[in-house]
Image (cartoon, rainbow, N blue to C red; front, side, top):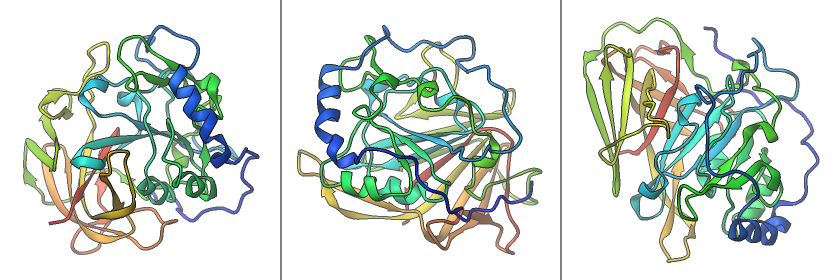
Length: 329
């Protein structure tokens, strides 16, 4: 597949209220719970039966959703239909997910949780993305408001969210993506620099890989029958509410700088900042093999290039991609 241009197109942002002014309404909505639904439900494969266009329509953008990954939030809904899932470190060494949707929109996604400063840099590689999140601390809201994205918290799009009855708050806030966008934007909206195609030469056989955060771990186990990787988080298999396994075709372990930010949670724990602009090493897992590669992203508006030591682009397998943003050692 030819590389999609990752340069941001000049385009006016959709009219919106100032996110900072929505903080109070957002807090109230989250405390009271949003209307509708008795919990997440999926129809068949949990997908909207919408034709996927070959090209992204004018003005279309990916939908990125911040997803809770605390044990009390599992099993999550809608993970298995994402095109890309990012795993990042948050306060206390725990993990949180960001699911990116372009070719398919699930009926329900969640539980939805709060945004972090790192998300703003990570999402710059997508053109005018829509970010669904439960809220953010007050000092971060002005940065979100100024970022080149469409912020859609409950205080702004209350009809798109609902409180489920299957889990206790705050692990029960869910999103109906169809109320934020009428159809999937298509694969061309994935302006992240990824290449898909035949596997590169070389690599080493590897059937399992575990990546550890200070207080979380991810294990990816190759399944020859599914021709994909079975995911386990903190030792528990990752499945949808109906028991379907989450099984990406490609897993990327991207070694990045994780530093302290200027933000803290309500307990005083510093919020880590994950730097995704720069360069470093990575491992790409596909087809039961692991490839040692280099990654590079020169500017925030660029996609991320994954290349072999001789500079050739590394193809991912067709299907879902998980990118685990691990602290470089």
